[in-house]
Length: 454
Image (cartoon, rainbow, N blue to C red):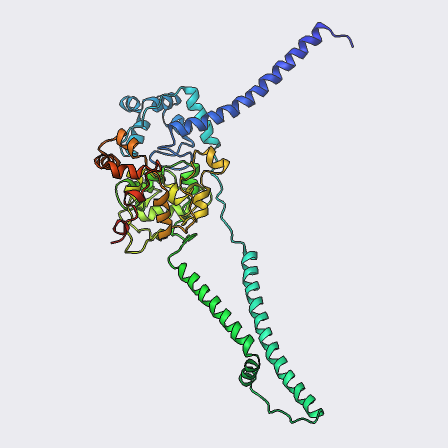
């Protein structure tokens, strides 16, 4: 095949055309991706693509501006809405009046960036909520297996009594054949008493062992009173810590704001929820059903974006519930002690509704690669006692080390700074505390009964 200059020219032109077509497709995808990023950065706090929020839905905005004003005014509106309103544009003034006479925040965007946002908005489709389904097969299997063992147990009892009766009859037949006196038919209790007397040595030892087993089992059950590890009650709203604290990275103290000022961490008020959910009305897995419960509690109508004043409080179920005679102060541990929430509550980034973590859960925090990547540190104390028990608290106080000198150097007026000054005044006591180069909470009076009990 002879390669001519004409062939080279045609090949180059074809390659050039294909390159342009491919790059146009790539640019469309790039614009869509840029549009989503720009929308989240500049528009999402007030607008949704397909629903009214603080501002109107943006889908169809370009066409509305073209029909009622001009595309040029649309660009100007985004960059300076007040100027378009002042120019006397009727559509701009109607928007201003309709949306509570609040001027749109000026956005420093070029025409191309605005186009990218609108391209993303027009192509936007809402995510489909995936409703969780109960595994009916597993529930049915568990119930059927329970009934199976009850039936087997009942059959075994029937067999034991039947065999006992047959054995008595066979013994009488044998005695009759041997010319011996036939024994009168005994009741089950009479037969048992005769057997127990004939085997009184075995029965005595067995009864003693059984009594010891029952006493030990009873003591173990009594030791479980007040132990609620893995307690995870169903809540009125299907809240997910995994989503909020994990994927969204919301700090614990944002919702539980009283943790640094009060003995209680506090349940977030519905106003805190509305800070985000005034804009976010759909969940990724539950749709609008669960978030609607927040709106009902706040008396909020998401269609008109107004408050009705009719509120329906959320009845949360308390999870971490200490006995009435026990005193615990969150602020003392978080502010003075410098404890992170994970020390007692574990890695809530992996949980849905709140759960009382086990000691194994607390010891595992910060040990996996995922935890290390997320920046979680291992807990300083490794627990062996059940969570929220007295032994658990004592174990923590015995093993929690305090850098009193360092704390005093950083802030002489702090709690530990004052303690350090008192210890310096009593050299003998100070030296006794530092014999092992460690000062624990227990050595500072953390085991005194009145610290935790009224």
